[in-house]
Image (cartoon, rainbow, N blue to C red; front, top):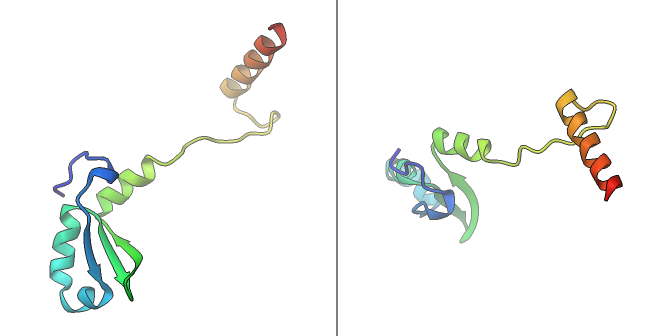
Length: 91
């Protein structure tokens, strides 16, 4: 993969149609090794093709916040919640 650690917004974006994908699959795959590839159908963006490494990086960068019911929160989270509520009450 040539993209290294560039943010997805800064990666070069190649554009191919579904017909191109059928007729020039090798070229489309080579483009995907350089960065995300936009696949269009009837001129409209329908699919993105990217390496497994880029996909994994995208997924791992996704929002990792969790919501807990107060009774089910892990001990550390429960302690932070209690501290925040206590602090807010003191203010």
